[in-house]
Amino acid sequence: MSFTQKYLDKVITKLLAVDDGIDFLHPYTTLKGDKYEDGKNHPFAWTCGFYGGILWYLYLKTKDEKFLKKAKLCSEHMDGILSQIGNVGHDVGFQFLLTNVADFKITGDDTAKQRALHAANLLAGRFNPVGRYIRAWNECPGINPEDSKAGYAIIDCMMNLPILYWASKETLDPRFKHIAMIHADMVMEHFLREDGSVNHIVVFDPETGEVVKKPEGQGY
Image (cartoon, rainbow, N blue to C red; front, side, top):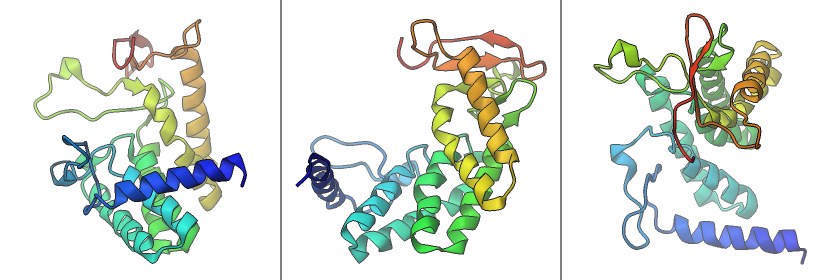
C-alpha cells in the first residue's frame, strides 16, 4: 500500500469517528470532551459548508449511501443563505463550493448547480471595481457609518475565488474568472509583505479605491 493510500485511510478513519458524534448538519464549535455544539444558533455561520464537504468526501471514498443522504441534506440547507440576503458574505464562495458544487459534480443534480451559480453571482456582486477587491463583511445593525465595512477586504477571500472559475466554465461567461483574477492581483499588490507574510485585513476607500489602512486582525 502506498504512503498516499495509508494517509487517506487514516483521514477517513478519523472522519468516520467524528461523523458518529454529529447528528446535525452544521457543527460549529467543540464543547468539552469530544462533542460538537449544535449549530442551530449559528445555522449560516461561515463554517456551515465544511461538514457537507467532509460528507461528500466520505461518500466518494466509501460509497456509503448514509453519507450521500446527509451530504444532500447539507446542500439543501444552504438554501437558507440564498433566501436571506443578510446572511450572504464573501464566504458564500467556499460554503457552496464544498456543498453544492461538489453535489453537482458527483450527482449531476441541476438544482445543486443552480444554487452554486446563484452563490457565484452573489459573490461576484460583492466586487468593487474601483478598489479591485471583493468586499468581505456586511454591515452590523446600528453600525456607525464611519465604521462601515464597505471597504474591507481580507486574505481569507482567496478561498472563495475557485467558485468563480467554476462558474465561468459552467456558464461560458468570463466575467466571473476576470473578477477572481483581478482580486488575486490586488492581493499580490496590497496584502503581501516583503517577508512573504500577509496582512489579514486591508481597508479601501470604497469610493476611490485608495488603501486607507491595514488594521490588525488574525495573526501578527
